[in-house]
Amino acid sequence: MDVLILGIGALTRDFARNWPEPVLARALAQRGHRVAAIGYLQPDHPSMQQRSETIDGIAVRRVRPSIWPGRELAQILDALPRPEVMHIFHLRNVLIWDAVAWARRRHIPLVHSPVGPFHDAYLVDDRERPYQSVVHYDRLAYNLRGLVRQLLREPKPRRQLTNYLLHAPLRQIDRFIASSHHEQGILQRMGFGYERSEVIPLWIEEATPIVPDTSVLAGRGRPIILFIGQLTPRKGFDLLVEAMPAVVAHHPNASFVFVSHNPALQHRMSERAAELGVAANLHFAGRVSEAQKAALMQHAACLVVPSRYEGFGLPLLEAMQAGVPLVASNIPVIDEIVSDNSDGLLVAAEDPAALAYGINRLLGDEALRTRLAAAGRATIAERFNEEDLLARVLAAYERAAGAASHTS
Image 1 (spheres, rainbow, N blue to C red):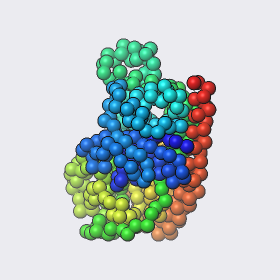
Image 2: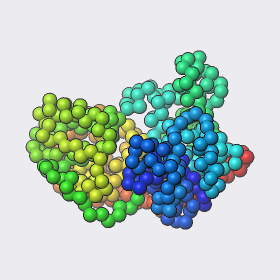
Image 3: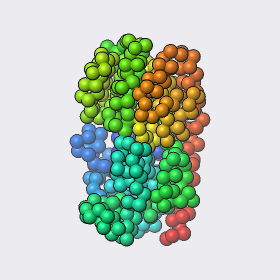
Image 4: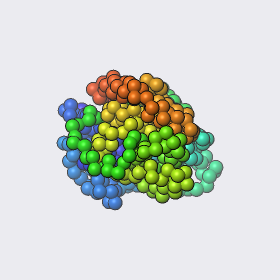
């Protein structure tokens, strides 16, 4: 099958290998399918500066991200082999208008994976805390009548035209692939019935043998409590800082190691840790190599995911695969990946005391850590098996093709 994947990051050589677009692209290519991937051109990002390259046998093209209709994307699409299906990722993908228009003119089936609908600023007022925000399903402009309605409500032409260009193409999608039942429910409330969607969770690639780079462990006390993610309120980094004193009280040499490619709020964390008297236990690793991440996973007592919202939560899978016990917020989507007290510990969201209790419980119980780690590996093997999930994706492509043939 010829598949064209339209994402944001597309494929890169050395960044975010476990993002859904590259994982799917490589899985398809390794099984003999012809795959092309298109993503954003980002001159300031070292991994996304090339307009055209081939990675792992996959043709990768990048285009300047713009919501406004133009010819650049169509020219790239015209130069690639005609796909049998186009798979679009992310609700906030600004390439969607031009991509869907091009595909519809050629009667190419369209599949869409939202990958976290509450990342959409038109749906929620606060994307960092969507469960504390009102969800505005009626704000999405799916047609010209909806555009006019929104202009009357909020007369900001540029914002509302963007609303229309992002959301109107969704009505042309033949099949939605939700990564969770929670996401499928949101799609239903957006007006896309269950008959047009199915749930197929994301997965990660089998870990390749790698020599850990233990230099990242220098100066870190034990036990190591690991955080991997952006330093944004959505990821709950501040909740973990607030939980630190209660953990350090029992484990004075504990190191809280934060891995993030986005250090924007690092100073705020340092200031708060100093106020709480735990600055010596706070460590920033920044962006790490795969070898350094392997070392951290190998030596971490637990991975903590204190998120306020997750579109899916790939670090959860990475920790399970590596045999690292989990402590995570009990919120939608995470609760579909982690079973409390089975392959991880779930704690109340927005509650540093509950977070600290969960961490201390793990640190103080070696048998529990061993049991959770073993169960996590079993979860990866049984529920997030690439062969099984890819077969379901290919079946969804066939259903999309059937739906497209009825509308063409």
